[in-house]
Length: 161
Length: 188
Image 1 (tube, rainbow over the protein chains, first blue to last red):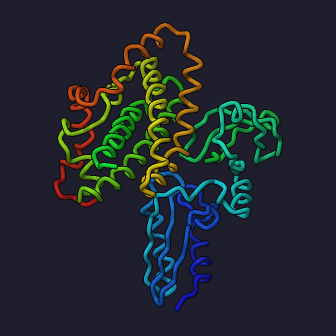
Image 2: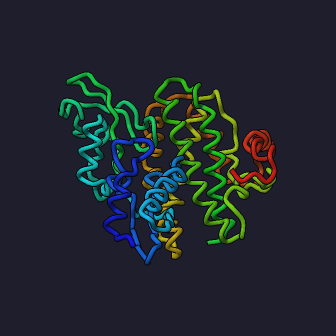
Image 3: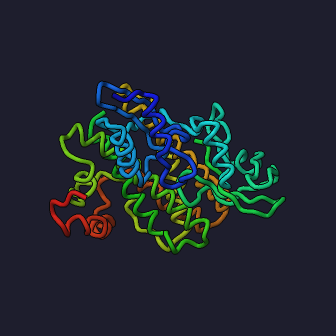
């Protein structure tokens, strides 16, 4: 029989398909794990609703749980329980080390254009706050593109949502 | 909330997602190619989640709702059905008009008594924030341009028209459902 802690450990080895330096646990997309005898029920929420990798993530998580000798049921929950504030401190550091600026904490209100254009977003390479917004959108829905005027490096900024 | 009301929003998001994706590869510059592609992906994701809720109520599946209805059964606004490439001014005018109207609709849904609808609306709103910022940025940039002002005036009345878009929608429907119709009963 598996314990809930063992399931968390196993899922911590399931990478995000689009940013494999972080796991699904780092991203905070696992909402709950329930162990009932040999059955494990995992609830997870997508970061963005248009995520094309939902099925792939469900399969990868099921396989990890099954490898522990349990039956797996991975349920996708489409509610509002995920925001970028759920990314763990370890996950944020892994993002930064891989050249993705981690999301800034979410304020009470949604971000404004002025904040995004003038705010102090740090370059993940040199740490300078002298960066500018190049594009609100990027290679995947979760990222914007910024440019560091100090080290002249474009970089991907995780959107705050 | 009736399934029909959910379908109205889902159809808007699906069809606008397809129309936005028509800029992929041919937008005036690379940043906008990326932006419209990303917005298209989000809109289609919202449509999928909304169809899933409607499908439960109607005893069907999201794919059947998205692709197996006849063109005249879609409830989308005529505004989103229009094919606007390669007209950038009208594209931005539609973007501005749609995002402004959609913001009001999504804000109302957030306080819906059905927790699943309210929760989904709140999640959609997090993503739509960035669409609105993008539309706002372009609206500010073009607001004095005569072609843009004219496009706003031309397109605004179409927003509330929900039964008149068949001639614009039919060719898109052909394209959108082609693969699914080619293999009836496929379960991919």
